[in-house]
View 1 (cartoon, chains in turn blue, purple):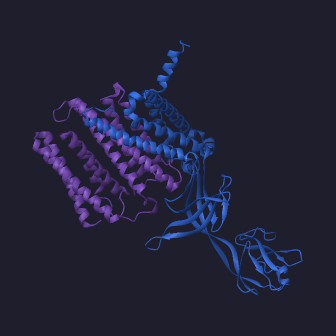
View 2 (cartoon, rainbow over the protein chains, first blue to last red):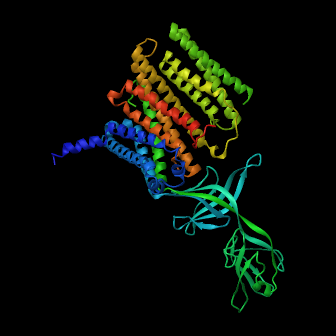
View 3 (cartoon, one colour):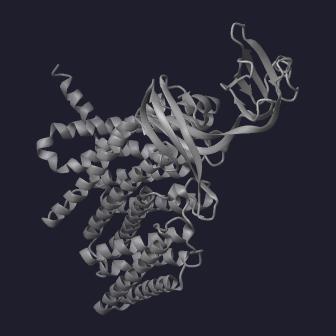
Length: 347
Length: 266
């Protein structure tokens, strides 16, 4: 055992070596310097890097374009080694804390760096980013890839500037876990909904056609999926589904071919289904009972376009940033205190 | 921009221009009165510069550092502040010639550009933006100061003139500039990361500006360690300060003007 101790000591010295830190930082800088020069000339590879997590991007683009992306893996590897080297430095500092406590600020900066690196690695491997999720007012929809969590949109409205130009979009959102609301936010630019590692941002807003207004024998009525209209003979008209682009049986689908799917219910009788494609006219099932439903105008529902990002390392990253900030303040304070005492502080 | 702010700007520029001339004269005929005059002019220029910045801030309703004019203007203001800090603290006298010349170039490059104050887009309307840019340019200013001190160190090693401070003092001041620049630039990166998280949903962007800003941070983190390597103290460290500022200039101007990034300058 004593034969290995000197070798172990040498290995430990190498692991916590300041020169190793400089070499790794230099290599990482040079790798990223060279690699980043490829980025502007190959936008089809690199332009979408921020739209997905790094792990997903590497799995997709990294595999497809290995010649242009190998440097990112090397850069990541070097930073990982630098992080391990920093961990060893911190461990060495902790071992000798009694004699080195005055350098706490500097070592807190190191700790912040390690936490940020670990958080980024975790987020890159286990996180995800989804753009362009459309959620209509009143709609509750599962958060993609995060089971048991739902988003509910209460309202969405444009924020207008002084000249009347739309400047921003405000969306009133709730996040539910099961049936329980766990977070609520008025989402707009620089004000996302953040809950644990989940960040929901409002990107834009739109309108979605979700039904039609009709006139006829029942007066003016609005029909959309879920509508129920009482009929004069005691029965009920129920709308089960509405498809604005008509993927119904006969039309075969197309641009704005609205189709209603519903049923007529009467007491003691089995429901009679019907399909009302507005371009084709009133279906026989409705005409038979003397119903007249003439379409007046489509019904539009405001929709919020959201970006949903999940980063499980977010709390660690925030802790890292806080620790680093504290370290910077301590290091600056310590520097001026030593300077005031006439020492030449080793920065 | 109001005429008064324009007058303040030109007043500051003239003060800096005269101070550079006085520093130059001092380098030639070495009269204490000359560097004292030069320092007074830098002080006066900085007061006018600060008033102009304050007035623009008041008129805009936000810290106006959003395009090429305003970033050069703010960078110049930060560099003047950093120079005054070193001059008043360490009396580096003739060393001011090089720093103030750099400052004059920055402000001179800003003058012909569009100084109009434009409405702030919602994404920039946050205190995180103010903190991010303020710490960024203060960090850059310390790196510019380190660059100047590095050049002066190499000159002093070659010339050994009584006009410049002792190389040991220049090296020490260089280390201090790097340390303070690194500390402020770290705060810039932290606030920028928090802002990116709330604005775009991620704290690190693989946009070329984000990548290069991290490279600048990594480079200066390396420099904070390099001074402990005995063989690298002195000339190597001064050389690294010069190289580091080249990285800073490329990250600020090269990427901002020549490439498409999420930090456009115009």
